[in-house]
Image (cartoon, rainbow, N blue to C red):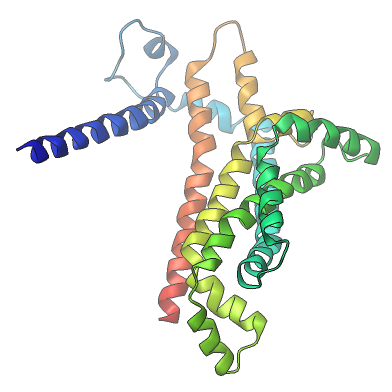
Length: 271
C-alpha cells in the first residue's frame, strides 16, 4: 500500500515538473499567433483568432534575414571546426593514456568555467587590432574555442566506452589507426557524439553576450537582432518577441532531427 502510494506520488511530482517545463513553451507558441490585444488582457485568452502578422513582420525584415544567415554561418562553421579538431583529440586522450591526460581534461573543462566577459573583452581588443572586429571570421574563431572544449569534454567518455576488443579485432583484420577511428570508433560512439555536437550547436546558437561584445552591425547574430525588437516602441511588442523566440528555437530542433536521421540511416545501412 505504502509502496503504491509512493509510486503515485512520484509520478505526480514528475507530471507537475513536466507541466511546469512545457507550459511556458506552449504559452510562448500560443502568444506568437496572438494579436497584442489578446496578449495584454488581464485574463488569459486560450481561444482567439490566430494571426501570422508577428511572423510576417519578423521574416520580412532585412535585419532578421541577415542575422539568420550570420547565425547559420557562424554556428555551423564553429561546430564543424569543433568536431573536426575535437573528436580526434578526444579519441587520442581516451585511447592513448598519457601523463598529462588529466591535465588536458581539466584545461578543457576550465575553458567552460570562465565567464563570457573574461573571454569577450580581451578578444574584442585583439579583433580590433587585427581589423576583424564585427566580422564572421572573428565570431567563428571565438566560438570555435567553445565548441572545441565542449566537444572534447563530452566525447572523451563516449570513446572510452567503445570496447577495446572491437578495435583489437579490427587491427587483426588489417585496419590502421585512421580506419579504426573513422570506421569503428565513431560509428560505435555515434549516439553520444551526436549529443556532444548538438549541445555545442545549441550553446553557440543561443549565445548572446559574446556576440553583443564582438559585433555592431555586419555580423550581428539572430539573438542580438531579436533583442532589438524591445526597442520598437514605447509598448513592448509581446507578439513579435514570442514569434522571435519560436524562430530562434526552430533551427536547433531541425538540426537535431536532421543529424539524428542521418546517423540512424548510416548505421542501418552498415547493418
